[in-house]
Image (cartoon, rainbow, N blue to C red):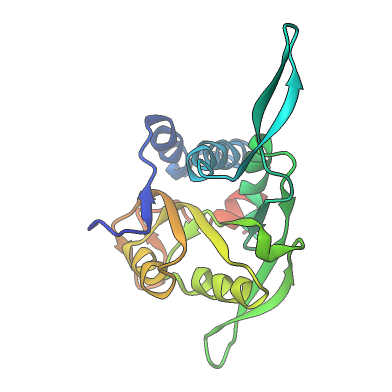
Length: 212
């Protein structure tokens, strides 16, 4: 995959190892769910390195000092329903004070365009760093639509984090949302005729929630 300015490939060995475990069709629901959460936490560590900070006074056992803290009310996690829910807990382990919004999309059966059916975002959304999470970025249609809806609701500083992506989806987010930084665990080979990522890991939502 060529270098794109707003795309970061998170190639840490721990992330790659856990993604390989996700791919295994014999990985059961419980382990799959745990791995998704762990990968989200590892990815978020890198994706959130530019969170705004503020100095506050702390009294150590020795003396008072000014120390850096993450600035209050500055972080929102927004999973794309439903698979994105599997990544929320991993991020919250790093930033337990973050607020969580939700965005749900469905594909119009006639136009095949994504439509918003649910969107609830923490306020003031325009002041927050927004981390949109979804394990899979395939065609990029739903991801791009979710970013559009969040912008329409007032979101400004937005990051998108996924576990695996197809080159087609990465390019679409890059082209349609050059202002959004995209964090990807692994860029896979391609999409097949059914728009599944290859080699991929199957349907992330079904494997997280144990449904078929």
